Length: 42
Image (cartoon, rainbow, N blue to C red; front, side, top):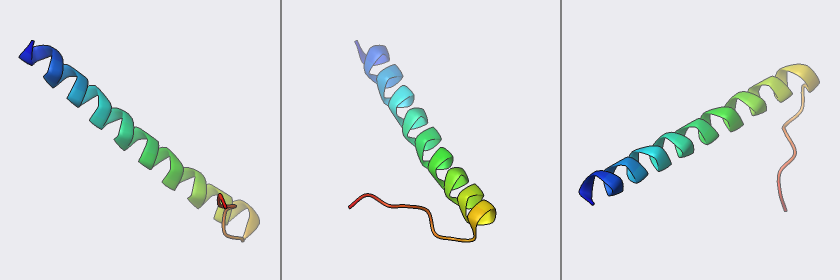
């Protein structure tokens, strides 16, 4: 049971980290490509 919780926690943390990294990279590419700030949700 503890191993399952640890696996789920690790998996969620890696997923969140990958999402943050992807958003930062996409924003950087957008700024370089267009010279503007990336669109944001309202």
